[in-house]
Image (tube, rainbow, N blue to C red; front, side, top):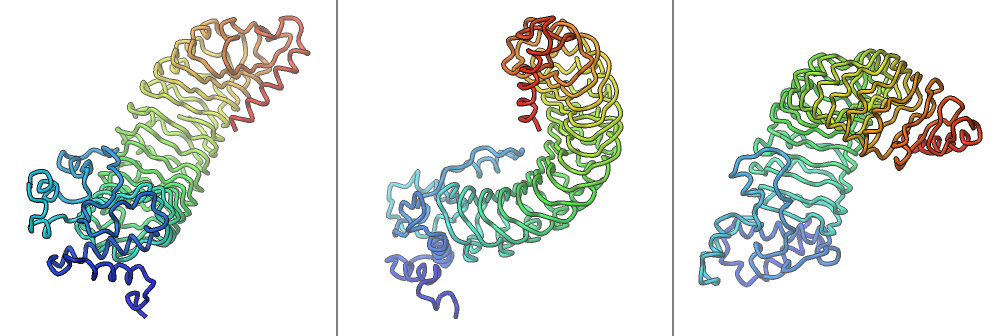
Length: 478
C-alpha cells in the first residue's frame, strides 16, 4: 500500500490538509508541490506535538510566513557576496517574495499566489523527531537545509541529488544512520556538508574528489574504511573534520598537497603509516590534529614551513625522529624548525620518546599559550628562552630527565596557570618565588629541589605532599 493509501501516514495527512486549502485551485503546480512537501515534513517529524515552535504551520497562511529558525550567520568558509546574501537571508523564501512583501501595498495581491519559492529549510534546533521524508527533496529551489541539534533518525536519501542549487547542508547532532549517498558530492553548488555527531556508517565515497565542498565535517560518527586518495583532488576544501571515527589504513599522500586546507582534524582513528614530506605544501594550514592514532616514522622537517600553524597535536602515536606536536610515542629530537611557528598557540610533544635537549628556538614562539613536553626522555637544562613566552598559561615538563636548576627567567611567565615539573629527578635548586603563585603547581619536593611550600632542607615530608598533588594533576592530563 502506498503512503497515500494509509490515512495515518504523513503524506496522507499532508494531502488531506492541502485539499482543504481554500486557495488550492489557484496555486501553480510548483506551489501545490511545495506546500505538500513542507506539510509532509511537518507530520513526519512530529510537528504538531514535538516541535518547539510550529507557529503558522498547518495554517493556510503563505508558507513563507511559517516559522523558521534564524540564519546561522556568515559561514566559516569564504564565499562571494551573492552567496553570502543568500545564506544571511531572514526569510525562508526567495528574494522575489521578500521584495513583494516589502513593497506591495496589497497583501491580497493575486500575484502572491505565484511567489515564494522555498530556499531555506531552517529548523536548528526545533525538536524535530522522526525521519526526513522523500518529499522534502521535491523542494528543488532549496539553497540551504539546516536540521542540526534535533532527534532525526533514518538515512540520508539519494534523492538529495534533486537539490542542484543546494549550498549548505547542516544536520549535526541527530541520529542519522546509514551511508553517505554518493550523490552528495555531485552537487556542484554544495559548499558545506555538516554531518557530525550522528551514526553514519560505511566509507567516504571516492566522489568526494569531484565536489566543490569547502567544509566537510563528519566527525564523531561510525565511519570506516580508508581515507580516499581523491580527497587530494578536492581543491576548494578549507576544513576537514573526520575525528572520532574508525578509519584505518594510511593517510593518502595526496591529502598533503591540498594547499587550500586551513584545518585538518582526523584524530582518534586507527590510521597508520607515515607523514609525507608533501605536508610542507599545506601553506594555509592553521590547525592540524593527528593525535591518538597509530602513525609511525619520523616527523618531516618540512612541517616547519607551515607559517600559519596555530594548533598542532600528534600525541599518542608511534612516531620517531623529529616531532612537531603533543603526546605521541615519538622518538628522536625536537626539531629547531618549530621556532618558525610564530602564530602557534598550542604545541604538544608529550608522551613520546624524545631524548634530545629542548631547542632554544622554542623561545621564538611568542604567541604560544600551551607547551607540553611531558613524559619523554628530554635531557639537559630547561632553556632560559622559555621565559620569553610571556603568553604561556600552561607549561608541562613533567616526566623527563632535565638537569640543573630552573632558569630565573621563568619568573617572567606572568600568565602561567598550570606548571608541572614533577618526575624530573635530576632537577635541583630553588623554585623561583614568582612561580609559587601559579594556580596549579606541581614539583617533587626534595633535598635538591625546594621552594614555595617546600622548605629547603626539609625534604621528605613536604615531598610526599607535592608528589600527591602532582599525581592528581597528572591524572587530569592523560
